[in-house]
Length: 289
Length: 225
Image (cartoon, rainbow over all chains, first blue to last red; front, side):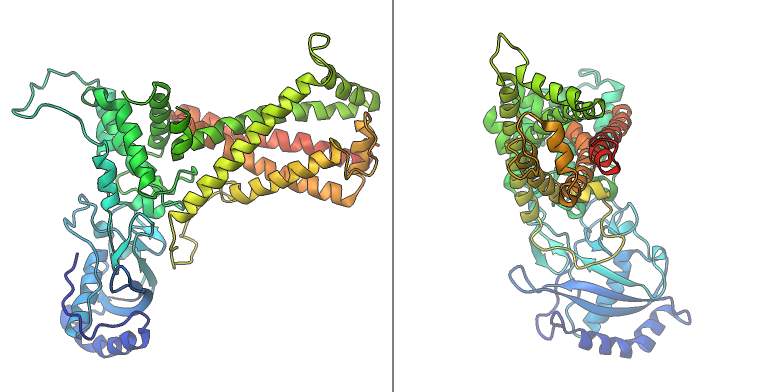
């Protein structure tokens, strides 16, 4: 998350006039200095600004200029933040880490779509997917289980607690086991790999109209459930993880499919049915495995 | 086990799926039985009488009918309570919505989007339908033992037709989403099956809606009178 620099003088949410006027001054100077003669794209951003978890937030309008189509969406936000800092305003807080599409930190809803219009993470979304003059809405993940900490940063700890409830295997630690000791059938290995791709970004929750974490939970249940290493806890895992998921206040599945469409890692929608089957199987087997 | 089923979102959804499928099975039989009306008053009224005597003499008069009614009542109550509780959860899970308003926001089929309100319409319709043709409370003809005449009388009113047609369109949409969703809630997964399920869901929705609508349309056009 971007460390907030100063607490004085920050643009209050809703103070759109202020943000727009300062931008007008920046148009010829900051932009020209950064990109020479080329102007690049000019965009209107409506960004959710919220100073803290308990404070009121609002969509605040900014204009950015000189945006190269080769920039990532985060580069574009960095450009805005550099200007805001130079002008003595608070930069927009957003989560980011690897910027390689593998850490899952950079969650934000862009024009109503989790991670924007491409099936990637926000850091891998390039500005060429937008047109010059576009207005872009940028909002945090919205879910009761993901409280907003500041601006676009939400607390995704609920997902960690779901994993903690059963998203692991119990195995003796120490030196690496002999590779052939436990044979894994090829189809099971493929399924496990496909589901292990989940990076826990939370896009499925953000996209789901019910704020459900079904796809996230299903990815781990299926990943470990198909492997022999995961077999001893097969029943308790699904029961405990689903209980934790419900306790965190995530919604349920209404078979809309928005989660799988939004998933940057292509976790298949069918994994939710797989988890449903695993859950009902565990219930039939009388609870604990 | 009951606790695990009713307490969790997945378990409650499974309850909805099973109760929905029970009602769907009944609807297929109900629709086919309705088509008896095209064989004339004697066939139709005779069929209605036979429904009350199934299992006789081992079972008493209307016993089978009452067993069916109790099962259906249990199914509809479970279905509605589960739907209400899950919907409350789902709505509470997103207390603050997205400010963005645009075409890209969320793509849902019309059937998926109308599940909740369509369900409410169907629930209200069931009450009306029982008052109209079972208890005959609101039926314009209201002659016990003469369902043919009662049906014709009901579908000779503008409100009878409007309510029925609207409810049957809602039913088709409800089944279109509900059948495939129920299968997935119960863990039916494979891609090969999924395509078949979608076709079956659409087929069931079409056949049931068309079959049910055939009766009021026949009365309106004078084919049945």
